[in-house]
Amino acid sequence: MADRFAVGDIIRLKKQHPCGSSDWEVLRVGADFRLKCLGCGHQVMVPRKLVEKNTREIRKKA
Image 1 (spheres, helix red, strand yellow):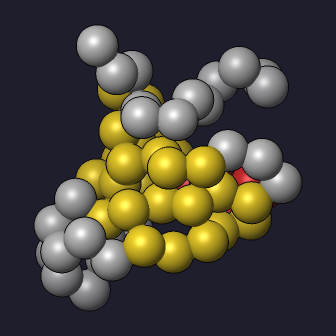
Image 2: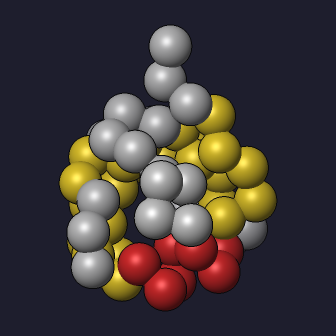
């Protein structure tokens, strides 16, 4: 489970950001995740537990 997420991955969450995008880029991994919205560029810090619970899809970086 610890290797499930990596910096640079694109994840799709269950709920949309207010801009309409559901896709986020992982910028930091740890107890908290820093995520960047791919729709508007907004960055947020989210606890790991919420990210793991609300992730629908993970696309690994090339």
